[in-house]
Image 1 (cartoon, rainbow, N blue to C red):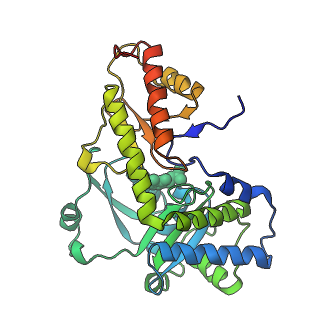
Image 2 (image 1 turned 90 degrees about the vertical axis):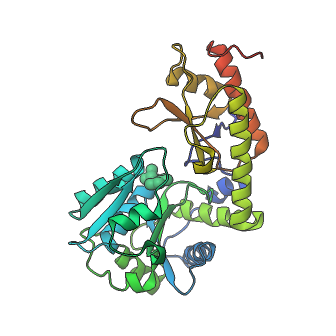
Amino acid sequence: MDRDRILLTPGPLTTTLRTKLAMLKDWGSWDGDFIAITARVRERLLDIVHGQGSHVVVPLQGSGTFSVEAAVATVVPRDGHVLVPDNGAYCKRAAKLTQMMGRRATVLPVAEDQPISAEAVAAALPIDARTTRFDALIAASGKCLEGVPGMGFVFIRQAVLDGCAGHSQSLAMDLFDQHQYMEKTGQWRFTPPTHVVVALAEAITQFVEEGGQPARLARYAANCATLVDGMRQLGLKPFLKPEHQAPIIVTFHAPAHPAYDFQRFYQAAKRRGFMLYPGKLTTVDTFRVGCIGAIGGLEMQQAVNAVGETLREMGLTTAPA
Ligand SMILES: *Cc1c(COP(=O)(O)O)cnc(C)c1O
């Protein structure tokens, strides 16, 4: 079967045909056409966060973690100190990379099923969390903008970045230098992921056509509701309370049945055209299903149906077909 499976994973995710088609051309990294695409992508990214005038955006080659690491290396002075509220694996990763780069990191442990409260952060810092504005915000191409993976981008307050020269102990991860070079030449400092950039440009065009952030959020929220409702009917319960659940990816408790095995469960769902995602919690057995990507209610209902068939095939349910 040569048909693309639907990725119910939080990046890479399912992209549209238009976004895939955008990758069928080759681009010179120094060429004016590609420079214009980079400039346009940066401008539109700033528009999305309403950062024009206050912030700049610095794209960087690599996955999201590369941009997290570069932001810490660039924004935090070498003798700086970072507070990492920790309610899961990505937080532990952020603390680890901070320490590996020689910065002090203090971890504020939070349970994996709890959000991080502004009060807890305020209590750990002697500053007023209500007035803390964001100085740096990190995201990646292959997430909710529905591009393909391969680059991240960091929004940094202009006034903050101005003071970041020489902070980075890394050459390739220095966002101050990356920004300076890009401002001066319009080009990326080192070879850009050209196909990823043009795919992101095309994905952002579709994001705007769809109605921007509110429309994207509404589609993901509807996907999430279809998924959670359908899975509940199959007896599968979300790990988080509904008030803490974001409509990006849902962690479900694994079926409490001795015959359950994630690998078999995954393979059976894949044969039906849907790729699930393993859990990442330390103490509870879970699996995850993404709600993001170029998919809608129909695909989510089909995914639920595939999970239902999988449960019946594996003998994990007594629910009628
Ligand atoms: C995606 C993501 C990252 C980066 O992960 P990569 O695999 O490096 O792209 C880091 N933190 C969070 C919360 C994320 O969602």
